[in-house]
Image (tube, rainbow, N blue to C red; front, side):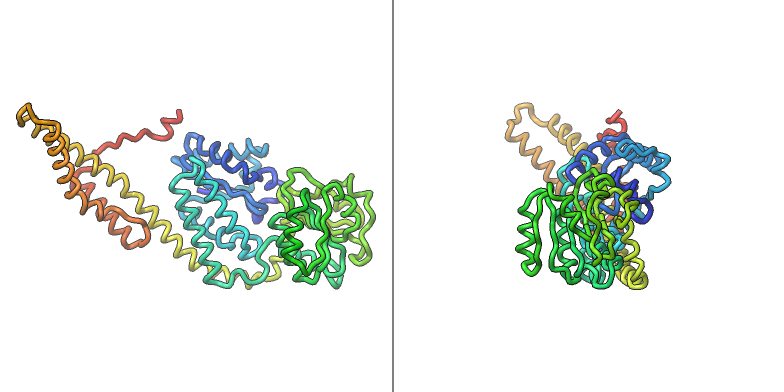
Length: 443
């Protein structure tokens, strides 16, 4: 199942309280998977969403444990969280992740960054014990779905990132001439800022200042975009640079606001080129700009939730592209479910081997009891090998008809039928595997 908060259902004020930096994902996975009724867990935390995917042994108790963990992490009461949380299970949860990976659930349709973030969930999860086989299979298939949607449809055409939407929003809010005429400041030099530079240049902005903790990333951007005049300033010059800017983009990982009412109200007003209004466009979660700055004269503040205004402009195009992508997603859901169904035969394979091994040992002991007592170790080993060889030869055919990689749903159906037939023929339903329940083990 998946439980989460997204830009569609939850204001940024709540999402930022739950945001978990990538470096802390392993800790979150460990804490979640250690809950009594959760077997596997993963976390996807971005500027637009906070989602937890789990495999739970109990639906109701799993929901309760995840909600309580989210409340403890954020300090938000469970009852307040439940007003905004979406909860999906089984195929609905699978479909949701595939749509997320494909860019269909993003604020900006076809956004490219989300697929990389889903890849990162898989990469980090594979290093953590609480991220098990089921979730690994789910995220691998989601990545496949996302790649197919991007290569087989034109969903990536147009504005496909939060950064590009932020630039589009700036163009909408500025006077004629847009970003090409005003003084532009970018705070931060990460991936989002790199995309900001790219899209600002495409809109005619050739001069911009970047404030960052270190200079190297800005030097890299200068080399990558030699046609633009990109100026580096250190973080200590942040307020001076802000006072000289008409348009400020912020994209940093800071968990506290960089701009507050107190440190901005004394700055010089924006130039008349921007109509005397300084625009802050904050695409960070947690936010870098305090919302109360909008109370200051000549100041406007926008965050990721305000990008919906850009999205609304091409609603019909979004609907058509989403319909094309959904066909691919439905196909990949079938492939995932076939793989998951194929896992059902694993216990039968183990029980059949266990049954055959018990019969082999019993018959071997019976045989040895009738043999001379002076049998050599070599002779006993030869009988042991003979009995194993016979069993393995007899099991080879049934095993081949049980094993499946889940690549073909029709083949999986046949494997399931074979499994059920073998369960009946060998009465494997009564075969007990020595497996302790997860819940009992945790208690």
